[in-house]
Length: 524
Image (cartoon, rainbow, N blue to C red):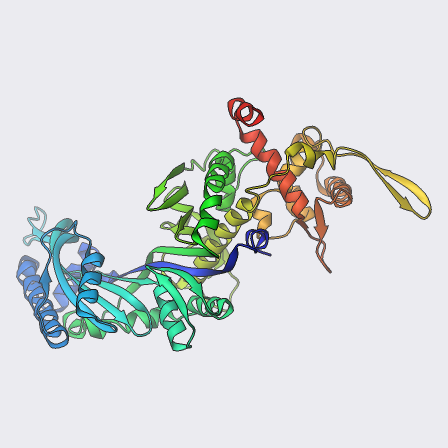
């Protein structure tokens, strides 16, 4: 269940979750390093000393091909951009608006930008020069489209060997075109949907995006933007990676003011409870029982809050990946940005492994082969964050909440009164209550085994392990159920937090994370 949506259902029209920004990079792996490029040139009877002349000839052909395409489809040549700092997307959107372009090629621009290429250099050990990979600058071509299927998108092509390419899509633009094709009405501003006639259909279309054959999709653009590819790099094919991906979950409120009234509380709550161990748990990273990262992990954790256009934004960084939320108009967006998937481990086959064999726990790859599991991991991060944030704006005092569990319960069983002890939430039951509030259990249910992994070697476990620890946890799960903090899932040996349990556990965590000064301000 989406607790945040349930809590504010009177103020929210609907919610959608799926891809936002997707940036793919393509490369010819066999010529990305100097030795590979030398072999490539040798097979084409090109000497290393003639590399520059050869590359200039190919670059000129690519640029001329783009010029011809631009004149044919846009009635104008490619437009040169003097500074690489100019925002190309803004320039393209301005032209689209100016010319009233609804579909197809908007324009082609060129700009000299940094790149990696090769240079022929002196070789003291051989009677001929060798190639060395180095950073340089060369002309890049920018193609902007409003595609009939994928919406507003761009392609960046390096005109100098080794001809790297970058394709940028947006899941919300893609959804816009899909809704048009299905005759579903909507109101949109930028890449935010302010209202959708059919939220169920929109979510179905976003889910279908994840199952796309991205290899085929990306290769389908090559004959359009790189028509000379078969002649220039005969026999080679692009290897595609996901350079950056974003999974966004949008809560679309009834009106802007209803959302604005909540943002101060959301921001304050996020920063107060955004402790290092909780941020690690958002990302599914393992921590010690005391909440600290393992010695060999050395994670970089950073939290920031700032004004964001007309709203507010809070962002938590874990290494190069981040999770954030912000408001724009009547949309509250939670978003995972993944730049480095290698910090996550998933079950998959290795590149050359027989696919009928068993999968192994390995690092997630940047290649498009792992885009499905990448999306799943990103969704789990967003869901942990939203579930944690669902406790914001709780007006019931922590004292009143704890009062309901700090007294014994008398139950009548078989006409006999049975006493159930009170919970000692800041004493002997603290470790258990903090364990069940772990964000990881917001995605997967609370289980005896899961709690064993979290509580073993803690003072609460009392040096128990195996069956003894399992029995102790089982008895305490029953105690938590009787006090209404957890509920058993149907036909399973697993549990989930109740609304009461979520409020109490989050309140305790927030209190423990707050400074004395902050608590005194609240008390005043």
